[in-house]
Image 1 (cartoon, helix red, strand yellow):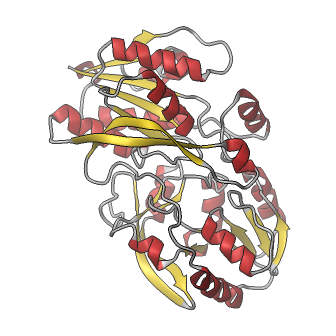
Image 2: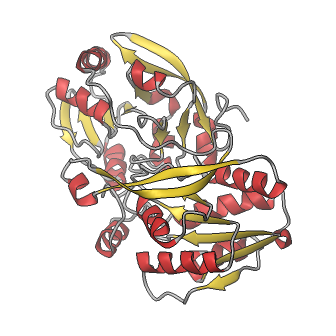
Length: 385
């Protein structure tokens, strides 16, 4: 019987839609909830367990998990009868709760420790488990610098299926990295190495460690910016996503930019800076004209939606529509993917499927390429199901 440990950080990712650049700390989580953000980690855990349950009866898996929101609620909802560790939580869970649960699951001898969270959660797991303990993350956070996560909840489920089947699944050490959130909110990106975790690998189900830009491509960014300026429509609302590439475009246009936030432009003027999902929604309600979203994939990972830009919620993306996404990237960033598709993980599987396929990518002055977008476990093709 396969012994699976499950730890959910219920607050993971709650700061993303609120534009808070992360969810670390009780005060940040409370502020995100006050701004109307919804908890999403449990839903993502459920998607993983449901994927496994499609292939294996729950009685064939010994599931060990935390009490209540740390895993029990989701496990029982998916038909499992889990063994519980830890104590009942009153109020928000803490990093100490995660670490204690992880240590207890190691003592229980789990074959794989599955955790749902972000880079802060990965740090907690790294603090608590020995180097020999296999782990796998289900991405639910905001920053997502580490290489210990499956690309989507379904991809995590498929890796577990392959392990249970006894397929040949490689396992290797992957970096745990995290960003200083306070510095991040001031526009400074400081990524720090915290250790390594032993992670199963198969196909392209696990995301890469985020890579920073290795070269300054000012001329390319200027060419992209000039194309965007020429093509900008009067009275169209442009939602500018985060990233160094889009920051370079804003600089060329002479506009202030939030490096890791979302800004709004209309008639080539800055309308609002560092806008949360609720602010975007309000603006969309007031704006009667066309709307376009300018986004760029994360370097090294190729993730287009669902990491660092959770302000672009499924509701906003559905309202704007796939045809109004403007994807910008230098050819170096695309080449560095080595043929891997761009990935979408919006927390809405139906939307992710609708976004899959080939999409134009603006790579220079009036220079576009068609590049594949994948979703779910369909990361090795252009996204067809």
